[in-house]
Length: 419
Ligand code: PMP
Figure (cartoon, rainbow, N blue to C red):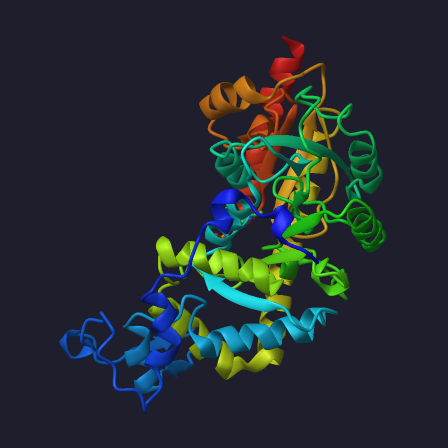
């Protein structure tokens, strides 16, 4: 594929940092380096690190690797972890494009914003699901692009709506601009959607990929809930069907190892990953070494099979909570709201009934007064149109408080619809 036409002028203008370009040579033992601006690690006070797991096992770290993790390292992350993740991608997704590249970042949010910026040419338009992840919207609001919502339903994003928008451009442009170029990039959260909890079915994904091929669209697959699918086998990713090299896939350790460890990774075409690395070179230089080592120590001890077992346990944890939560919703919200039962992740998107057209004030004012928190749907709407929907999460609420939380929410909705 020719990626140049997708890249923003700002992204194309990035050159490798002169110093960062030397990084790959620094670990070559034969090299006598006068070039590095590295502080001498002899001055660092840390001697060693060990981590105790909840299982009681202790993980100790190779002394040289620990020392290495304390210093500056490659922009694409600790090579050992990078390689481990690369093998994971091959095992899990078997990507048809063998030439893919991978880079690690401090959480997928960091990588996501770099990916979006890479395509955000001033005056252009970008496709997003409606509703979509508010963290992506908050970033996109700062970018010189117009958003084009694609509709979603209980089976995920609607490929026919995407096809219609692109076929009928510019008449379908929601901004009304007749001279704006057709969008070239789609941002999607295909599994356990934040906020909907809905995952795109395999049929939808296949059809989506076809539509993206037809209109030459790059897909940003933001998939932090991928391993939190409640049904097995897991529905294949866009990355797994990417014969053209049009998918940039974001993964995250946040929902499966730790969110504070700040580890995400992006896999996709070399040209695009290289552009993202150029961005990192001038912003945060690299992902932090110690968290990467913490992750690598555990993952290399587990092996890929141990990792799959762990993520299976995490998915079961959330499935059990989902089941309890749905029971409580059935008890309290029937007739007051509608929802799709989530098949993955930690969210549920409920549509308030009773003539309510906008959930904002109800959730931010009235529900807070009744001591129940949720997120008003407008936060997830690309064009900020009012909506009667609300995002609720069953992730952290104590199991014996789910019932009470939904009882409080039901009271607020009832009072509002009776008012
Ligand atoms: N994308 C989506 C859809 C998310 O829900 C989140 C976390 N809320 C992120 C990205 C960011 O995750 P991370 O912690 O890996 O930065």
